[in-house]
Amino acid sequence: MDKKTMVADLAALVTAESPSSDLSAVDACADVVAEIGERHLGGAPERIRIDGRQHLRWSFGTEPKVMLLGHFDTVWPLGTLAELPWSVTDNIATGPGVFDMKAGIVQLFHALASLPSLDGVVVLLNSDEEIGSPTSRALIEEQARQVDAVLVLEAAADGAVKTARKGMSLYCVDIEGRAAHAGLEPERGVNAVVELAHQIQAVVELADPAAGTSVVPSVISGGTTTNTVAAQAQLWCDVRMWSAKEQERIDRSIRALVPVLAESRISVTGGPNRGPLESASSEKLYFLAHQVSSESGLGMLRDCAVGGASDGNFTAAVGTPTLDGLGAVGGGAHAATEHVEIDQMVPRATLLAGLVTRVLEGGL
Image (cartoon, rainbow, N blue to C red; front, side, top):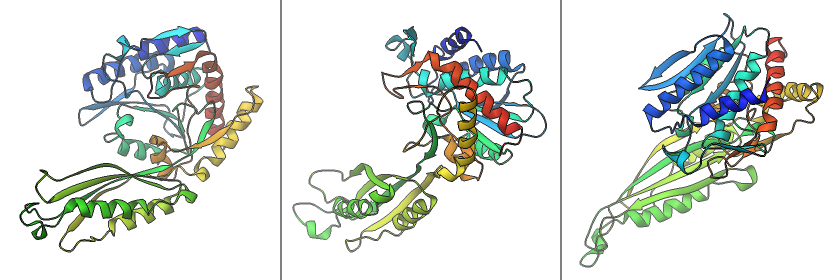
């Protein structure tokens, strides 16, 4: 594998800006990804368009065994390159999306290009991960059910692969009261904002810090004018947890919320968005990766658990062994400090190539 070619491929990807919300820009980036992939893998991808959004898939052989999963959309708005340009200085590459996760895509292509055969390999790269994968989720889950393992090319955490990720649920609690004049007859109203205060306290008490379960009221709204008893209010909650059991407990509890004020009403929408990637799902793959790293002279491979979610949560939730964080080494995801350590790209691609080989050989 050649670091110079990797850097050239990375430059092409980073300078093809791809904010999730801009379909034209994402499509243009998909063309760049497809060209790089075709050059290294020897064939063009299947272009899968769902609700106007394009995803790319390469499939080799007739019996899929391992899926390599990633995304080419970013959180950065179009025009960010003018303020955060692509650059390489002293082994550090910078630019929008360089770490999350365009370097991982480059490493993926170079790793696979080094293998004698790709029979049994599926590569799936989507364009909406940063907004929750609304159009690609079903595609990811369907493909995951057909393979023995999923390797996720999201960025590493200070060099460590990610053997666990928290699950995520998102809820909206709508509260209905009754309007009245705040000065003339407030007693005739039912104050939705007061009910909102009660419900905020109720959901906060569902958290279990010892178990790593957080329940965060994140956005609230309510009322119309300063002299009116509020007839409507709304509360959004972000929930994170390490286990499916905890996700189910929170879901039951939030749906069971009851009003405190007489005649106020509550309705709950939303629910689990991503199940947890529990350590049991990644255990065997991490063991194999650790072996590959040691035998290839790459040193001790570390692992970690992180609170953020990825598409790996989806694949683990359908029961497919999943290892995440196999992508770039660097830091600053979603921040102006986003960067990749260039000298780590070849070693990480070498690790990935060895891990794919072990899975194809029936290592699980």
